[in-house]
Length: 330
Image (cartoon, rainbow, N blue to C red; front, side, top):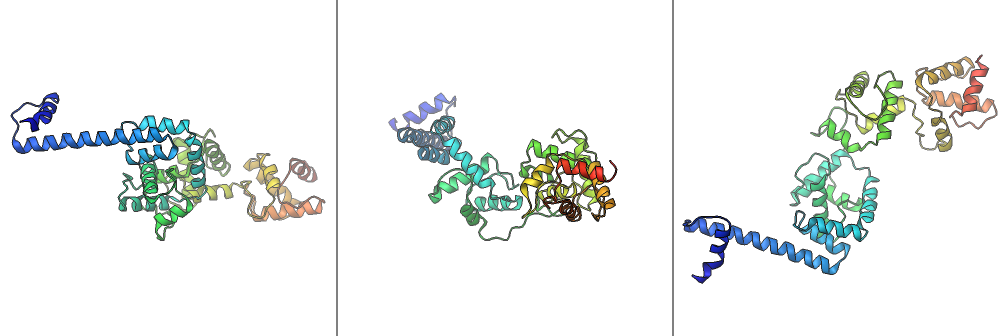
């Protein structure tokens, strides 16, 4: 009789009404016991982390009990110990790897295969995927950050051939998820809106807010460039838009300072077309007069600069823009 005193008291406390079938009673008692044991393990693990009071100890607790009762307390303790700065450093290091959406999907699948649940294989690394990465790192004996290093990425990809999705094959990942993975800043979104408008695709007000107007402009640009019309951009499309709009982003080996100087002029597409036409009238063939400062235009600018006794950078300064206008009649 004494053996069932505690379980029966627990049943009464939970509002269960006897009699209960013997098998059901056993299941209830077993479930309650498991819950109590889990709670006790959670509590003891947190107390151990408190006693150690180190970043490693609190991270170990969070990896073992990602939804533990003391999760918030452990996270706050990590902040007090300066772990947030360390996590930021790990995050920046991961960002520099340039992990593609397809690779992110592959990592999620590999973690799931190994028993670390990411609760999704969509290429978007949220809290669940970060927890899975952290737990995997802990089990390997690596520093637990939730962000992968280059060496860890190679291990998780397991030498698989992973290629970024092209314009017509997104590997099952939605266009919105592909764009979200780019993590475009507000400034970058503003720049893309301006570039689309310069190319003749009206993206509306360049405010960084991509509504129906901007999505329509993206679709129109995609249609004009024979790409799948999704209204969402990929990394390759962002690069192509930048190239077509004559972005000041310099190619390898170019004069970065000269490119930056020209970018500060914020020349519109109309102004770029006008300059191409003026250079052509002066005898410097740009090959195109579409507002895109491609290789032909850059070569024409450099030749004109050389003839004027200026450094042949291929990028214009404000004074040079004025001089070209003066030489062609204002």
